[in-house]
Image 1 (cartoon, helix red, strand yellow):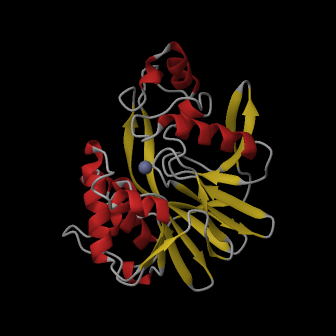
Image 2 (cartoon, protein in one colour):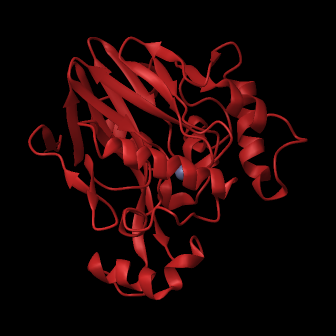
Length: 282
Ligand SMILES: [Zn+2]
């Protein structure tokens, strides 16, 4: 069963690669009394975990099929490689995918570009990548020691999609109605993707958050995998504040659901989208 939403002419479908347990190992602040309160308020054990998704997304319009990110593939373990199966439940094979917009080059977003043998899984897809992100992750002098595998997967992507990677400005309009939204901090060129058609707008904010249960209440908390935590916090606070005034829908790589950001107490909450969201099984 998959979930989808229509944003004007675009149909966007969630492709769930798998889930991971979110604990104080990811975000030390959740061990605090406030963190325990956040878990309890979400109906979870006070020490967690919350189970958070690895999402990729299919975008269909006219006769186009694009993906936003490719999911982890086998890079986060054998249980998180479901994106391709999810795509098949929509009736599509890898060769049907025209293009893949890459939000950032962490392996839980790029691992799914590769087959088990480390080759290109999508034979006809053009990849769209932001210039800051591409330059950073393909440069061995810049990649932190703890991110070697992200670097290796970026190099495999570069090698096996050679001639099919379009490196774009960080705020590029990729197609009418599809554009990058720079959200730096999680990684240097971390991007969201805005879909818009007429009055309908949805921002897929990728890794702006890794736990809705914790980070709507405490957006000033970062995960240990944010490469520049201060910048990630600054980006998150500024974006949430702006979205609280807008009708833009949001969805995330590691957050469930779709809705609008609204102020709540001294922080924020997600008000789920009414109508328009549908589930279907095929
Ligand atoms: Zn991620």
